Length: 495
Image: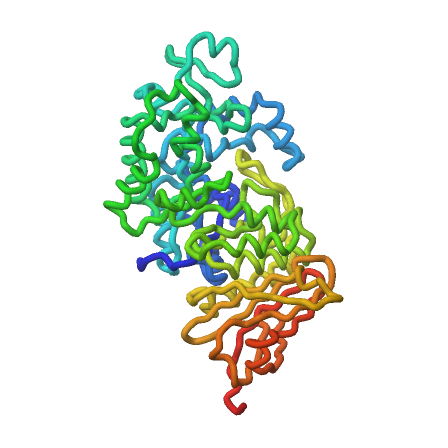
């Protein structure tokens, strides 16, 4: 397959749940080998460049057992699935027993078939990689205990929720330094040279089955973070960072392989420098959810080299459902922002139909929710406008906007444009619950002296405007609450 597009649009699917529901509709068990072609056709028709099949690796029976004894998790399961039974807990996809495709999902052959189906439709495949930890019954636990952070008997007695005793060893549970330990996973020691070599071998195997990986909590294995988290337990700090070593070795054999980082704590830029193609833009998500439009605009003032390697989203399996967080109009505005900026775009299965219940990743079944036909129609139209127009193949520029002394509502608007060899596009979004007006400066002296038709690719309304005005005083825009314009500029040849 050709190289990845510069700004891919990625579709995340909860593989287990998706297959369960497909099988329910087909009235037969379903694996990745059996997915009807029309399902892949439907995904391809929306303009996606890649599918992230979340949760294909073999899940841990030990992890399931631990989860079933966790009252907090059980309460979360019942919140999402009121008729929850033990059979619904199929195990966390981030408690990996082995990096082999779970047989219940079709095994390696089923995944290979799904990948071929995607490739035949011009789409790539992304899978998970979890660098920080593995399941308590992963083969490394018995075969290579030196790969792990270890404690002693005293740790097991004093902190039974943070240490597990097995095979005569005391292992530390996986940990984010700001939260209690995760009781169902064991902490890998990423300072270990032997572990890093094993990780490279694992990733080479994974790379033979997909076109890229989404790396879970990628910042946890950075040297500074890991040392602060584990101190002397980690041993001698290596001179080199984990990610440049691992990514460099993988890329030597697979130069086109894509690495996407789940990243937080303002470490996105550093992870980009360590080799990641894209890093989560959680800051944009938070500002769209809680902040004013000006906070979004300031975020977009960062260097283009940083912007174009971020992953824009308003929903994924770790966040609440967009339909539950945003009002219907605000969700549409946020979706326009996330899909029309430079960088990768991530959408989540169920987002387009308006699902509101965030499903714990342990569950293999979810409750029925009535689809929102109007919302799906909006997303279909938006994705068609973005993917089919080719706007994101061009040059992106943030646009200025100004108001006047008695009207400060211009600060509720954000605007940017794309310029390709074939066309120009202008996006203006009102990120507030008030009607707002502004003069939006459309960059480019070459638009002067010409008349232009502005075609809104979402509403199909049109306006004719003079280039001198748009490049000078600015295009006058008046948008209602959470409204937006997604303009294609068409030159009027008879002007």
